[in-house]
Image (tube, rainbow, N blue to C red; front, side, top):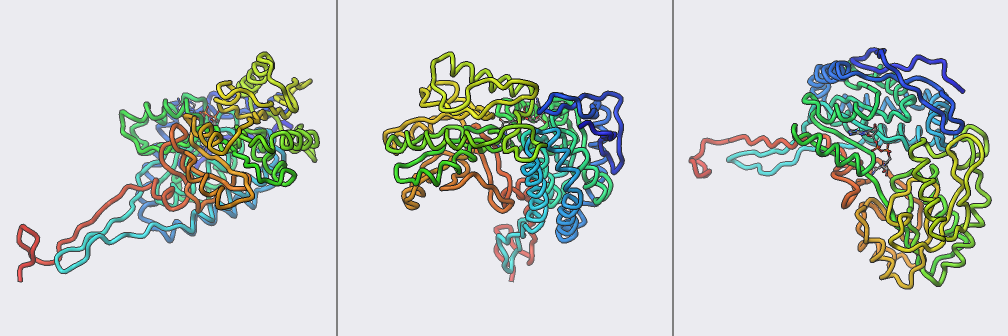
Length: 482
Ligand code: NAD
């Protein structure tokens, strides 16, 4: 399905055309479905200028006014759910049900974040002086989003940035710009002119934003490698930064699990969104007492799962989103085969068009293999046999990443003790990774800098300001003149 729509950027409340455009493909069939704008440097300047003009009014509107406006954006998402769902599936590849769930999550985030507050805190309040600390907006936020959850992860930035009183210039990934451009235009129309601006273009546009003197903060979600470039690019202007980066989440399976119960949950922890989730389980450390039973249950479950075009009813796993990522996943599969690793399922190559990879489970590869050490970000997952909980813990923590992790056990106390020793920003016990607008989400180690969501995530879109008011005439040493 190609879209007969003129996709435009939104700058200063108006739809903006560009002279250059680039093709956007459907990863399920490699057909061009639309052309997306290629923002020039001059147009980025205009977007930043529009955001700067809008900033003082939005800042001064105050928390309660913004709260109403941000929550109302959730209704805009829901009112356009059907066409946006089909558009998201066409450009991203995920099944229609998952695309709808992503859009519903975006609406939930807008409403949930609008419910948060950052009250002033009183440091000192006596006859001599009053000292109050407030959270004030930073200014113009440049938001840069990836292609795996293009809408939800853009909203993770837009909602708190706007709530805190900033104006925004958002850039989607060039692989998945369409739904964001469309939705962004709809959302911007419900806000004062210039408060939300959407630009699109190549990776260069992200680098221009990072270096732009008119942008005060960059909120970036993407790979660790690009995150390093963003940090370097932001250094000359000392921008505030939030970096949500890659992960290589370990799932630790203890010997007391009910294998039949946990197998489907572990499957989806690893393979939802075709494994393209930053917090997907990417290494399964399974106690030797349940290794064979779990390996069998997972491969039996994998055989029941339907991989295909996300637009077709019944599809549970879509294609890998883009050609470079597909080549990377194929390379990992081919290398695993060349090294003689056994596949519990998959491992083969897909016939026909589209960036499909059959669900692939690798049987106990060595700890130093690429399939274990690197973030796969695709439908391929290693199962690793461990002899003890301590061994699992040590191997799980032996990583440059520290985004998430999970523990699977019938003994909640033991699972919680283990969770506390895992070097990861979020640890889930006995469930597939879930996130919430109320729960802080922060990568440890090279999985990120800063935090998103919850009160700390909102505070990350503010500067701290302390106002100290002298109350009574005093001596220089602070004592009161009586
Ligand atoms: P990516 O780093 O290639 O691109 C992310 C965004 O950055 C895109 O919009 C891209 O155009 C832009 N970009 C590219 N080069 C840039 C530069 N030099 N300066 C500024 N911007 C630049 O990431 P991706 O392939 O789109 O996403 C997959 C990665 O994102 C995975 O590693 C995944 O784990 C990670 N991710 C992390 C989280 C999280 O919350 N921690 C969530 C989702 C995805």
